[in-house]
Picture: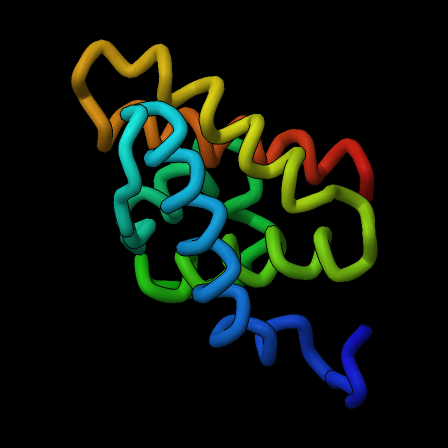
Length: 123
């Protein structure tokens, strides 16, 4: 699908950011029943990295921003390698967001945690 080679998965963080925000916006829209544009913050993504026990994989001396980039890379790379579909990503996120009890931030952390755990199964 990509017409170029990458040397390091971290090179995918820019396009991974766009992909993650796309699936997150679709999931939030599905959960709320109206079209919304949302961005997954580095806080949400980094907390999901911690909760999915991927922190050690992300490297040493990393910031919250680095952990957010790491999550974006992992999610996009899994989709790129066809280990998970866009539809499956949206379904996982939507399912958790629908059960949010009004706390979107905490529900988003749980949703991305479940997505990262699902991606780990396919690795």
